[in-house]
Image (cartoon, rainbow, N blue to C red; front, side, top):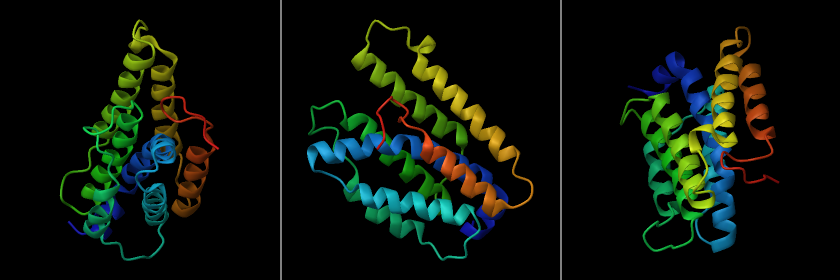
Amino acid sequence: MKFETLLASNWRDIAYCTALIERMYPNYCLFSELTEQGDAKLLRNGLDTLWASCAGHEQTVDFNKLLEKLEPAMPDTESCDFFGVRPAADACVALTMLFDGCAGNQPLETEAFETLYCSTIMAYLEFAEPDADAEQHALMADAQAYFTELQQRLADITASQKDGVKALKAFAGSIATSNIGIETT
């Protein structure tokens, strides 16, 4: 399926997944900064391309080419013994999944993004607070509240798709912490 066709019928799903990745992105940035590995700017550009597409900006995007560029930025979880590699890799995997869906290589299933988002939190809690009840933890409650808020905001977009997506991007970018509680700058 061509991206334009997918976008016309699924722009809300693409915007939803982009907003989830927006909250995971600071995890990648911190890992990249601390290890001097990866390319946070590449991920930022990918997110901005997705936001612009959802807002209806006319542009030609080759998501298969973006996937090729993203591959070298993927953190190597096998060669790094620092926990931060996991949430960074998860952010990169999520963006890869979205590019793959936009390229028509796989179905776009928002549930898979929610699952990855929450599994990052679960892994973090297992590492940082092994005795915590992860299902009842504030980070998990925040995730569920975020999912609900995004869905409501997307449902409320009835007039201008461009303005609605711009507002959603601003909302997602304004949250002061990542999905695992890393403060954004």
